Image (tube, rainbow, N blue to C red; front, side, top):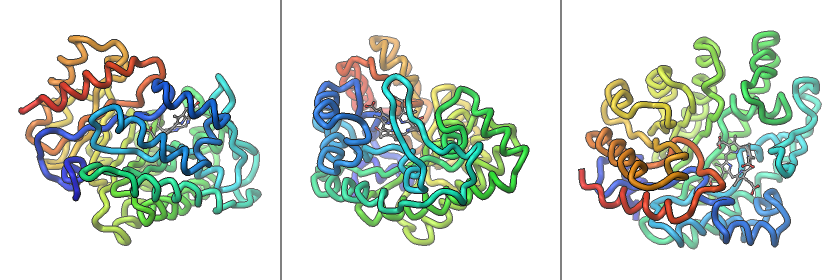
Length: 341
Ligand code: CP3
């Protein structure tokens, strides 16, 4: 039974609108915090398929969501490529050795680090209610590379942007390596039961136009082409956060099936410039979900109205913040489900 979300990603303009929320599982839910405390940390949760499947399903038990997104992280790919990965309290993720100094060839790949993730996917798939869709995901090569090169998150990705200018051949090798592992990783998720996949490109917005073509569009196009050859029925959602005016070129050239929009994009503009019939996903400001109330509902309806004439998956423009009151999520989803447009 495909369901509203999968039908939309395949190009149908359905009512009611399907919805899921980026980071819908996580620290704003008390049941997540409880299981995380019991297992001792984020990575321990990700590597415990029973716990990770439970966390994937937690938000669906509470709210009328149409999709479950695999509970994992985009940095599992660098971990499988042989970097050490740690999530330090209050500091975010750390990868070592960082590729700003170490050569890619010095890493010893550990492909077994992907296997438990497929187990989580299979467990979720077996427990998923009919009509709900299981989404797999990976980071896009550019965003993953920014963490592999700098060893941590950074505000403007300058270490990686500079390497890409100074030594494009070395950086191309890093991107190519990530592309290959990502294709295998997403294929593994699909074979385990993922019905659609999303490519998260959180830092796509920091690149100059020619660099965006080379490091965002080209690698994502390669991933989409490879997945389509093997799984023509499985939709791929591209989410190039911050891409702004480059969104239309991204959609055309990568051939993603659906396009995720961040909250800086005006829905009326997006509807005008994007290819007719292309499904879009988004794009309520996560801070409006945090603040809630009448303004949240008003902006939600504005987004729904703007996309009435094309397939639309309702979502946020980025992940749910950890201090978001969970009641607001229920109120948001009632507004989406009540829209008749
Ligand atoms: O959407 C989902 O709920 C699926 C699971 C998911 C997580 N991370 C869980 C997570 C997904 C899709 C991601 C993607 C991810 N991870 C991205 C791209 C999307 C984005 O948010 O921009 C990036 C850049 C990462 C890297 C990452 N992982 C960072 C920077 C952090 C630390 C920030 C923080 O919130 O502490 C993580 C940790 C992380 N990944 C958490 C979760 C629920 C928090 C873990 C915890 O401490 O409990």
